[in-house]
Length: 299
Image (cartoon, rainbow, N blue to C red; front, side):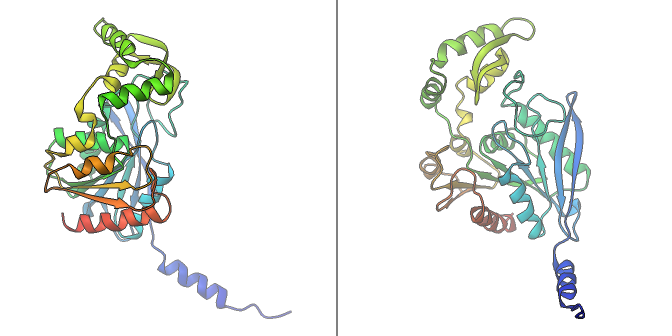
C-alpha cells in the first residue's frame, strides 16, 4: 500500500485559509403589520459599521434569483457587505417568485417605504455609509425612494437595467399581452377604487399574470399614467450620485440606452455592458461589480 501524500491536504488547507470568510444570514423586520425578510452578507473582517449595499430585485421576483445572489457573492469577495431584500408584495415573510394564483394586493409604490424601513434597520446596526443597488423595476422603485426620501446615510445608487415607461408603450404592451385594451380596465379600476373598502377585480391581466385577482387600488397604482415610472425621466433631477447600467442585448428595456443619452445631469453616469441581456449573468455581472466598485470609491 502506498503512503498517502500530504500535498492534497496541504493544498486544501491553503485554499481554506486564503478563501474569503463570508457570513450570510436571513434577517427579518416588521413593517405595516407584515414581516419583511432579507439576506445579509457580511464580508471577511467586516461589519455593518463599515457600510452596506442594499439590493432590490425586479418585478414579482425575489432576492435569491441569480443576478441578486451573484452580486452579493461578488461584492463580498471584494470586501463589501450587502443586504438583499425581498419586497413583500403584500405578503408576510415572502420567498421566491410571486405565485400568480395568489390575489394581488400590493402597489409599485409600496417599495418606497419598505426600502426606507431597511435603510433604517441598517442605520440601527451602525451603517451610515449605504449604497443602493437595484435591478429592473426595483431600479425605478429605488430611484423613486431616493427622489422622495432624503437620508444622509445613503451615499449613492446603482441602477441595473432600470424600468422605462411611456403611456403609449404601456397601452400597446398591455393589449399585446392580454388581447384587450388597457384604458377600459383602468377606468373601471379607478371607479372601483373610489368606493369604500377593498374592491376586487376578477380574471384580470396584471403585470405578468393572466386571469389574476387584483384589487382596484393595485391596478390603478401599477397602470395609471405617471411619468415617474420612467427612470431616465426621474433621473433628470436626481440629487443622489447615480450609476446606471444597460445591456446592449437587453430586450426588456430596449430603449434605456437611448433614453439615458438624453439625461442631462452631472450626478448621473451611464455604462453599457456589451453583449449582456436584461439579467447580466456570468462575466457580465463581474463587469457590473467592477464598475460599481469604482463608482463607490468616488462617494
